[in-house]
Amino acid sequence: MPGDKIEIPSVELLDRHRDVINAIWTVSHGTRVEPGWHYLLDLAWIVENLGPVSGKRILDAGAGMGLAQWYLVERGAAEVISADRDSRSNLPLVMRSRYKVRGLRPEDLAPALTVFKGNVARASSMGKVIYALRGLAGLLLVALPKRFAGLVTIYNQDLTQMPEIADNSLDAIVAVSALEHNTPEGMQMVVAELMRKLKPGGKLLATLCAGRDKDWFHEASQGWCYTDSTLRRLFDLPKDTPSNYDRHDELFKSLRNCAELRDKLAKMYYQSGDNGMPWGKWDPQYQPVAVCKIKQV
Image 1 (cartoon, rainbow, N blue to C red):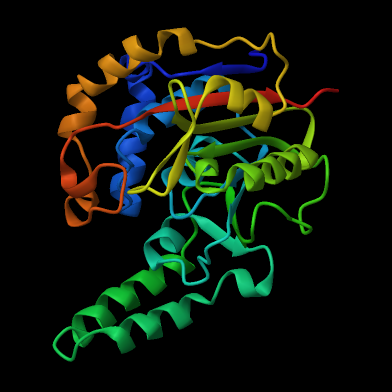
Image 2 (image 1 turned 90 degrees about the vertical axis):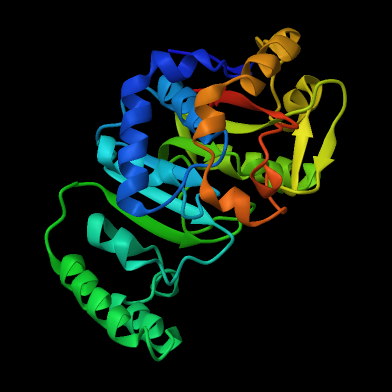
């Protein structure tokens, strides 16, 4: 079992966990959600450090529409609580047709019929028939039994306060490139709240962005890049917590030269300059870093 640590993931993870990568691509195709430019690496690290998930209750912190929640349910998690401050009340029918989904509170998830009606209403006059037919097919699939036994619970809530989740009730928490979008002060509050919700012995596994010698803010992706010392402070880690920041430059060079990540860059990056890879030009300005923090018994 891993202990507390700070680790810049190596691209070697992609080959070491090829089965995980292939499974993530299957989830991506099924949900129509593209992975972020380094998310395959993030997810491989999280899976390697998470261990068995069968029957567990796991929080995906800052989940959005991301792949982690769906992958964990397919892998056997009993429940994944999908928490994000942005609402997913109108969760697309494609997710609802593939997985068992509920809202933690009534307002967290609108009925599937409401989503269907909204899709048709927003469609152009030429597309209404197509949207209606697709939507009706989606509604039928939503009503059918699901292949995966696990449950995804949608929770539209700021991570600094999650009163509907009992303290000491979660087996594990994952956060895929989400926490860096908080201010440094806000992230300390988030980490404290997440640790309150973990069971003793439970793991918080978070991927963020690495800053080599100083903390800095990446404007395009609206995320902070943190040094080793800042991560220790924000996650309240002991001074002797293992870290591989001394390999920062070596690992960053390998990442920049990674053909697999470069050649599978998601289409969404080519449509905007407000993201981690503006306008789809492969030019990483930072690399992911991962933190494992275990709640003391």
